[in-house]
View 1 (tube, rainbow, N blue to C red):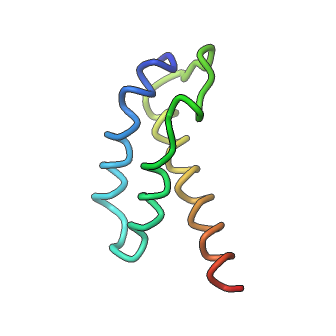
View 2 (view 1 turned 120 degrees about the vertical axis):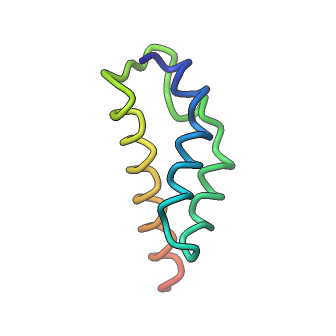
Length: 74
């Protein structure tokens, strides 16, 4: 899968996440929705399959969740 397909599917991956996470974490998805997927991957980025692309979005979600918990704990 090339970066163009990832960019095209980015919001779909976020929608999938939205379906399985708790309501209290939806605000983290809003942060990710505001990111431009063109800024996430470079044009030469290649994913071996769609699962890897979804994994990147999950990792971004988990990192943002950690970041938001750190910010709210201060």
